[in-house]
Amino acid sequence: MGKDKLRKFAEIDTFPNVYQLHLGKVMKGNWAAGHFKNNHPIVLELACGKGEYSVNLAKLFPEKNFIGIDLKGNRIWRGAKTGVEEGIQNLAFLRIQIEDILEFFAPGEIDEIWITFADPQPQESREKKRLTFPGFLEKYRILLRPGGKINLKTDNDGLYAYTVEKVKELNLMTHKNTADLYHSDLADEVLSIKTHYEKIYLKKDKNINYIQFSFD
Image (cartoon, rainbow, N blue to C red; front, side, top):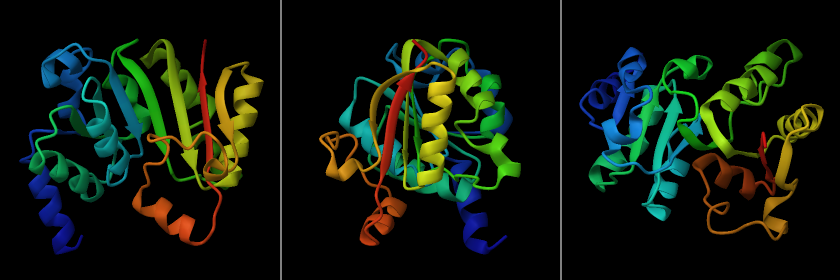
């Protein structure tokens, strides 16, 4: 591991807005009161990378709490550091394997989920690793409050098509859906938040897919 990564891993250990691996388990069922010191709704960003979406959502919606989740601490470092430096009180990060998410949140504790430019896991042999695989969706069903929504924003047409297919197969409710976000009427202030990688894709004239759905 390079010196810069080691430095970032050491630094996030000192951040009050980062919970790593087993340390986050003690917050299960108590994130709002225990960390955020309020009773506001909680929104997750899965595979958050550098946390650009979480940071910007937290700024837009101070009446909600946001938690970015990723396993790579050197990426989480950027969003967490921004949160500390700018004093964003409704923002936290959790470094875990998303497969283990039920160990860190109680049933019904989450208000909404965002999946932004996650690894599409295109190989058929890795289907179970896709964050919209039915096994993951069942975990989200447990975590979300009634009516809680899931948002997928991706440049990957394959992951988008796969997700649309699973939503239909499982008889889930689609609220918003487009294969070309920035040429649709859906590109509002929230959906126009752009991550580092999204900016790269847009420079290459790549379409951005988006779907919002729920279990009821």
